[in-house]
Image (cartoon, rainbow, N blue to C red):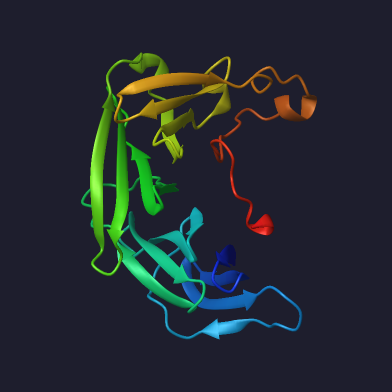
Length: 228
């Protein structure tokens, strides 16, 4: 099972969406409103889809997570309206191989970030403009002014309120000292932010693992759903 937490700002409710799966196929959806005396409720109607190791995000009372339609690539987003408890499918319309998207809040809208790094650092930013019409605005940014040999391992993780895209390596040890990149598309500028104490770890429990993955990057101040 996979669990997702959503917040509904009108009534101030926190709800947990639970998805039972069989071989990655979503079989049953249940929802629970957090509070005394509540129980799990079954959502009878939902689009057929598969669940990868899916990221999720909640924006203005709508919970989103990545889904597959059985084509072997990320080709859809499932939206869950926390207040009405309705599930909808939003198609991406991809025509290329699978990618690993990151979900982010870009100027109050759902956005996908993914990279196609080869001989250039290429950042794809897809912003959801109309969920009913499956309409996305799509932008591609190419970082020309950085050392591609050093930064080909960097991938976009999130955006900031200032419109910057934050990039970091998937594996912590790939860059020493550890740092992230802030790319501003409008200014076409890149700044580096160094984070001390990560690649300099000497703890035995840390060093026994060969690889350390970068799971999430949060820029600036983040609203915690538990304190809204």
